[in-house]
Image (tube, rainbow over all chains, first blue to last red):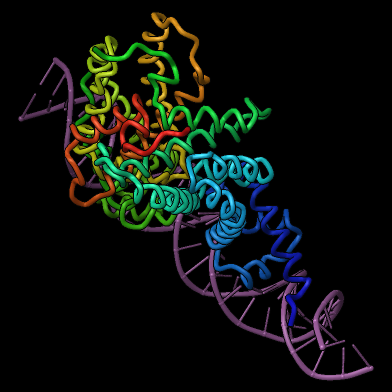
Length: 198
Length: 198
DNA sequence: AATGTTTCCAGACAGGTTGTTCGGTAACGC
DNA sequence: GCGTTACCGAACAACCTGTCTGGAAACATT
């Protein structure tokens, strides 16, 4: 009862066609026929796999997130002893491999639904990272935990977006991680040398 | 040669209908007829004002950003002497007044195009704030300026998004600004009391 | 209050998209 | 080789889009 080779082939073709075409003309401007034509698949076949465009996109995004999760698991465990930046580095590596898909997701194609899936996945990872730490934290935090998580994920996603949109890598992944961590942990005053307030 | 009262009325009705309906069922699921019906306007009239849905949304967003810019101008000038947080506070105030519109823009409705307009506007403001500062900055910054700007705007937008999506205000705007500034300027170690690295 | 202009309306139009259904054909796993 | 399953191609109604009418209503101006 292994999965039919034909199914894998058409699903893969549809996936690739979607990514290519969204990159070319945007998700909304796309018709199902555009996709099936590019994928060299009959239109009727599309509907035997997915209810509509959105379901295909959602499915593709979910697969991507599962893959990312797989990679992040060991990195998060390692990062539990301190903010090592390993999870962020893994994410950048993943983004490099699946750059086109990352681009369209991070652009908010599909009315931002895939992007929301992505940020929520990141938020779960961040929450896991923070949880392990707050237990052995003595002093009272000066900021709300929900706000902290949102800010951190927002920072990450924004930088990731900036990074994947460049045609040539603007800087090596290791450096991005270093800067992101310095900025988040030590703050802008330390990172830029701007004069501190009185 | 003042503008025709009828034009203002129908434009306003279409704007309100758009915001309401996007909030209810999402931008893509919307038809032009849905909008004109809710606005109590003939469908043909819609096309005499806008080419399509997207142009209406883009126009509504642009108006919002112009309004925001108006409010930010004095705040940015005041903030030039130090990171006072005045611009962020103004933005939160604006978001409270136009909450529904902020919601749909920040959600990425319309394939993320309006959201991109928004973040770019924020980036311009941030750049202006940073520029005035970097001149009288002695030491070499430890992080890239482009990355810094991206991270800061991403942080802001993510928190704003979090803030407007709550049905009841999770915390007063002044407190959000304080936390956001503490976090961005002094960093997570200071803000949370997490143990510093060796 | 009269006038010439502009906007709005209701309806109709072709062209395209959607999602579903069908029988026939080919590829599949076993 | 055999029974099963996925694919194809074509057709279908329903809907949406964008454009274009002529006539009615609201407008700014005098």
